[in-house]
Image (cartoon, helix red, strand yellow):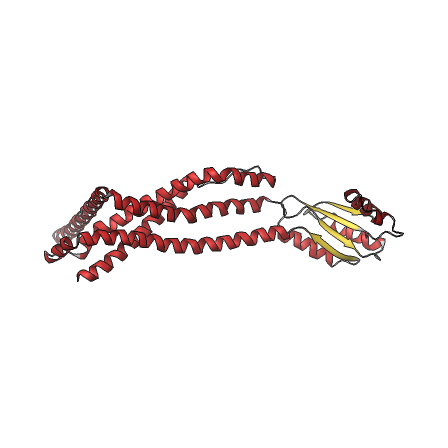
Length: 325
């Protein structure tokens, strides 16, 4: 192919690129003008916008505060020891060989710190130490307590490992029953799971409420400019040209409401911080209250609020444009 035949192809490609660049520049200018117009209208009517902004900020702050609280208690549950010991109770007729076999079985378990065997007399003395007024037990002719083996697990042993140790001990010869005090932690985790489900339900309902708040605000603004919008349609303005400033207004309200919700939650955490820290110290947890991570929190609040504001504005525009036509 000759050099002359290549030049028209290059010229056509450069013209196409130049046309695309101009089109993108015009598109950017249109969006910039729409954003400036929406900001001007926002500041020109502070009363109605401020009311919508405060209402939406409070609406978004409620699930955010619940999430912060749940995160703290979830973190607390992960740092707690599920139970101090696994207690193995032998049958009253268990012989020394069966007891020694159980002790040897758990002696080399890596999940255990120690394995302690208590004779019936030692169990009785320990019981009387904590219940010194039980005179009837002292007068009994025989000792009603069995042999007991106490399995001391490693700190922060998972619940699954404790259950496995308990099930393993229950199947050994001579063992009558076993006990581990992890039921309270399972109940706590169940409440946390319920709280997370409640959080998503509350988030869904309040998100719908936030969309309706923005939709009502934009709808009132559209009704105030109904004649102006109708005139623009008659002059040949497109739907996207007219709705663009209102969409940006919804985005602006949503983004500012997201920042406002973070400010509300930050202030409220100052009040609940001492209470949660007190709960953590009662469970021997030295770590302090977990607040909102600044970067992630601001990003999520602004993006979430902007999305809800955009959806609310889009809903109002579709309803009002149907009425105009």
